[in-house]
Amino acid sequence: MIKNLFATLGIVLACAAAHAAELRVAVKDHKGRNVADAVVLAVAVDARNAQHFHPPPDAVDQVDKQFVPFVKPIFVGSTVRFPNSDNIRHQVYSFSAAKKFELPLYAGTNAPPVVFDKPGVVVLGCNIHDWMIGYIYVAETPFFAKTGPLGTVSLSDLPAGEYTVRIWHPSMDRAEETTSRRITVSAEAPMSAEWQIALKPSVRVPRVSGAGSPSYP
Amino acid sequence: MARTSIEWWLRFAFAYVCTHTQAHDATWVPPWVAPRLHNADMRPICASLSAFLVFCAACHTARSDWTLATSAALTHDDNVGNARDHASVVGDSSAAASASLLQLISIADGFSLSAGGDLSGQMHERLSGLNTASVDGVLSLKKKWGVGAFAPWTRAGISVGRGDYADRYRDATLYRASMEAGKRLDERWNFWAKYAFERRRAEPVEYGVYGMSSDVFSEQGRSFNAGVEYQLSGRTSLRLGSLLRHGDVVSTTQPGSFVYAYAKAVAPDPTFGPGAYAYRLEGTTFGARLGVDYSLTAHNLIGYGFQRLETHAQGGNNYTDSLSDLTWIYRF
Image (cartoon, rainbow over all chains, first blue to last red; front, side):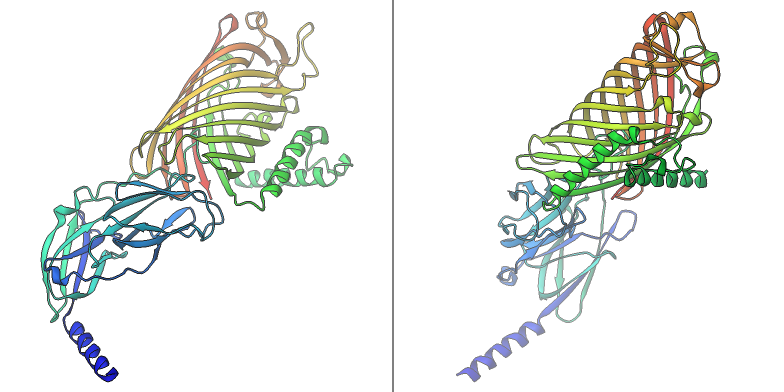
């Protein structure tokens, strides 16, 4: 009985591995420079390829009065913790429609985790340190990743098939839907694609103000 | 210049330590090291720094936010003495450096308390008698009326400082109380306003003018500032500010009956040369300031500012003053 169960499981895993495909994506801006922190999302056209899985708990840290990482993609329904690695207190909040929450002043790692149950962009802030900003992208698909410093990312273990792939970045000057493309991936060879997106200048609340300005604190 | 500056700071630091560790014996401080720092002068400094240290010790167990900032500035003032007559107008450039340490304690419901102090020094190119070492202690309470970077805020603060000049008759203790309010509209626009009352207390000058008060460097005044900051890009911001001040002003000029008749106090002011006299008058100052800042990194910036001041003092003793400065600020 147990022998049969293992055999069946082995066949299933082998089949799954045999049908896993890879999508390699490069994201550049309108000047041809690599774009880091761009979220790449692949939504399966065939609903049978949309896997159901329980996302592991995730975390967004606070280091040197900054959110780390700056952009965090997660799967809808994920639980995110907000540990505070600074030796001061932070007050994390979000006014975004996808998730409104506020964690009262806290230090250390004991802040209650937050469940992100709606897809969309969540902008994080700290009520004490106004320049702190971070983004959580709550994806409706389990197939997503974020570009690194070289502007590239690889979505591996995709079930072979057709996907609608799109890009999101905090400074993108158009709606992410305008970046959508249909891409078919197969298990035979990795598929490569490149996006060029226009970024608007990033204007943020400054950490240091000039002479005469009312600066922090 | 750099060597002189370092030497000057070392002398100040050494003199400061000497004065505090051997407070019972003022003669212990070698006069070649600190000809101007005496125990009597240092009392307010001792008191404010001691209070600050006690405050810090009390806060040590709590989670609080230390902010250390340093700045350096080159300034040119085209009318240092606030003189009306062209012949008495003296322009000078100066270099200044400061280090400040502030501790922020976040209290519930948007309240935060900050306390700290700063140590600063300024050296003039020509008027060396105006070279200053000063120390300030600051305490303020801030209320943020809501959550988020765009919530309006108000702040009330008090500060006490001591300025120690190369020409000792200018030494003074500065008391200041202020109320501030501000609001950031979005990532680009930031507005604020500030009302302050300040009082400068100095010793009367030893050799005054017969029949007149010689307490010329003790002043008080009220000021109102308003400013707006515009973030031009990710690194560059523009600042525009205005000033309205009413109160005492000190004008140093050659003796004249015109200014003498309206002066509250008069005293010789050899800092500006033999024959120069300082007059304390009552006046109103209007000012405008324009500045541009460029962030080098998230922690530091360089800025250029230009300020134009126009003062209308009693008896038609009006004068103008233009200041331009190049500033570097680093916040840890």
